[in-house]
Amino acid sequence: MDNIAIQVEQSLYKLFIAVSGSGFKSITAKIEVIWTPVRNVLSSVLTKVEGLIAPLKDPQVVESIKGVLEAGRDLVNSTLDLLPDSARNLAQTGQRFLNIIVDFVSAGVEHIVAIVDLLLGVGKALVNEAYTLAATTIAALKKVGVQIPATATT
Image 1 (cartoon, rainbow, N blue to C red):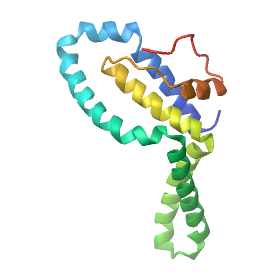
Image 2 (image 1 turned 45 degrees about the vertical axis):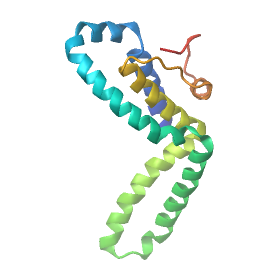
Image 3 (image 1 turned 180 degrees about the vertical axis):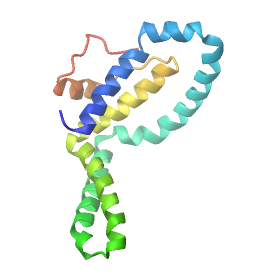
């Protein structure tokens, strides 16, 4: 799969499985004196981030953002040749950035929502909190051929 978003989604799932498994937990147990303060800070940050990203788990919000990004990309593409050389270089840099974002958008809203869910799941697993991936995340992963075990929880 060439789409960057799909590759990120699949990689995040592998990371989620790794950090929510017993191997990671046994490693952190062995370095508990170091890991506990790190985990406490991560947990505090995660609580704040969770509130910020909650809207990104709503497909309607992501769909709205998608529309704005696509319009921005189209605007940059349509005005590049109107710009002086000095401004064109800056606009082309912006265009490359928008193309990466549009690649994520083209993966589909369900995959963007899955990426947000997987990021949250990885964060929760890192701080040793149980997390169950959303059914929509599991469906998005299966859609791109990821083999999901019967239980995908921490």
